Image (cartoon, rainbow, N blue to C red; front, top):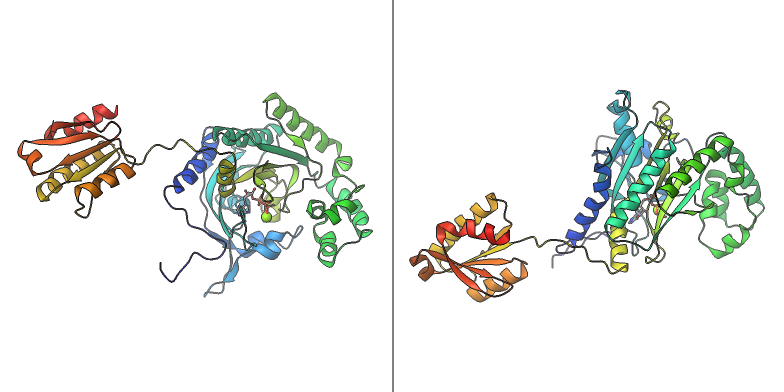
Length: 420
Ligand code: ATP
Ligand code: MG
């Protein structure tokens, strides 16, 4: 062990488990790639103002969780806590919205950073795959994203998740509701911190997990009763499209979500096997965000799914992904001449696309065969002086244990034949 450890709230992805993380990322991305979403990558840090926007309502992410710092050159930057603002910033900067081709559909995958209290499913460095559809107001687009996330989770074999759905209204009806809610909340017995929330982000109070707060919220005005006709009709269409697609959801009139820029459709994917960190993903419509960061009016919708929690959800359901062994063939040379010959064969097999590994470091036969078995390979290639004297390599089937001599220059072809 070195004197260093991974920083608090972080962990390393190591083989063999790291393979499930890759597979989860790929499974989430696959339906997006298949639906017109293009890959985007943005920097790991941004100007802090992109996230701490001075306008709009304040959020935990900005007030407590952001890794903000000043560079030697005096720039105020922040490690990205989420993807949406960065993706929208990048799309605007590159004028992707001006190609006359709206919506701009993008997907991303990467690391995000939040200074949180670490616990199971809650880390300071975590990984998300996300999707954004920028510049169109169309209930079918909201539905599309929810359907694709559902498809991604199902393709992994997950079943014990639920989709919670709500509408947060728009710039016409939301402020009226906000004022009504503030008036109600001001009449309650709440602590200092929560009282401050009433002013800056009152909808967040509805989300408070404490029973003492939830009890008092009975009878609170519900956004649902304040939605304007347009928002109601829009939401109804989203619901109908989901139902027609056979995607089950639950109406959750209290769902508000942590980010301040959501409008209309909001949704969360929760998994019932995860305890208190139950949200595996979430998203919604953010019609006002572009203008908040100095862009034109671009109604948009997106989601981000947490890779770490999705892996935990797989564990909770006892699902092991069917990940093919990384190595198909393992070469075991006995002696210098065999090292030279087999190393050549290994290179040739790799160039032919066969996943091959080699016993390095001059291991003895016993140790090398152990490594061969551990690698998950189907075949081992074993050769010593006597084999080479006869011009052959032993091809050993590691499942049956059966071993056959094959002429050195026919090994590649024979291996490919056996692997099918
Ligand atoms: P929570 O309510 O659990 O804090 P959130 O609303 O802050 O979640 P989002 O900002 O919507 O989460 O991020 C989308 C997804 O990213 C979450 O559903 C979750 O799977 C994952 N995620 C968010 N924060 C963390 C974290 N600190 N550690 C691990 N995964 C996270
Ligand atoms: Mg959070």
